[in-house]
Length: 206
Length: 232
Image (cartoon, rainbow over all chains, first blue to last red; front, side):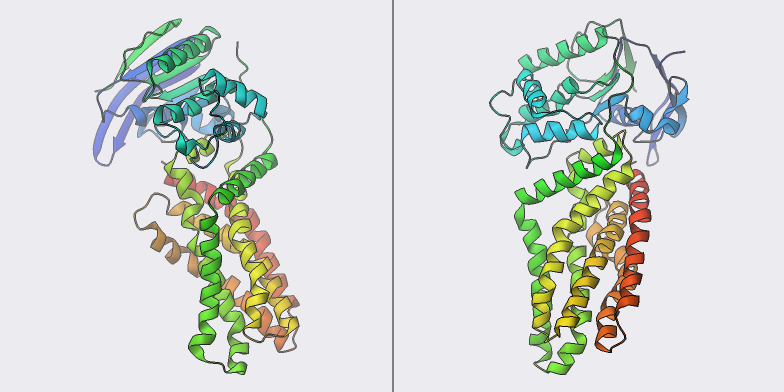
């Protein structure tokens, strides 16, 4: 039995059906890239995978159990990075990182947050309020969460949006490292990116 | 191989984290806090100007005026309780927290009370002087607000969660929440009137305390369920 399995997933928005009969299964060390044009339901699919949205039909299982019945046990195993980064404008990068990882159940000290931000190329900007940073830098603050969390499944919605080529490289390395350690990634991206993984699946929507 | 479960902190810690964070955010945007407080002060001060300096009339209407102003002031800031977290995606992260969402909501409601309720409680004795309230009446008024304002924040959290992301949510939240505030208003203002009539405020204050306990248990849970529905 695979670790994460989606069967017959269907998404309906209003009276429009975005997709149906989506099936996939994910094993340790594997990557799923979700492709599709704008409005084809990529974000909706990822939100379903997180349990934020309920599929109109079908179900998603984690180790054989429906994610809706697992709740906290499942949330403890995933990290979701959505379109909205979940970064507070009025807080500094360090405060943002410490609070978002505390919310995810991992308390980190200032030193560790500092190191993670340094690694993401934000050295020297840790103590600035995030509102003075650029879009790409905000995204880096959000991505720094991946460095401190210890979750198995990463669900990433357009993680490369607004990033420069150095940061893209950084994220690519991060993902490869995670996959090599037996982690799993489900992501959407419009950029062509080659990530070395045990197995890469393409999920095409519409 | 990665561990399947992160080493989590337990739920009461989470409420503290959220309270700490919301207080920090409130410190960075002091204007939001001050608007609520000034709204309260101005509304309470308008009544003596409008009604005229009839001391006996002012004395009888004081508890009601202060309480209604407190309800409105507390409601004024309800819209902000979840909406900023909703807009920047933090709320999604909260829903995906392995910790109990009710505890997070409790933390947010308590932070809302600390930021909007507590200043009102502290200011009310000063405002009561405008209405020539006796020392005893001022004490009872402050005590009733101290017990009642957390209930307003807790009930308000349910309304704020239900109207999240709706257009015109601000008006809708007042329609949803104000009727639920009525019992708190009746017993809060009633406490002062009862003590002025020599009946003692004990019964009213006990009832307010009971409201507080019930809403502490039920409101975070109800608001957490509403949040999950609103976010779907």
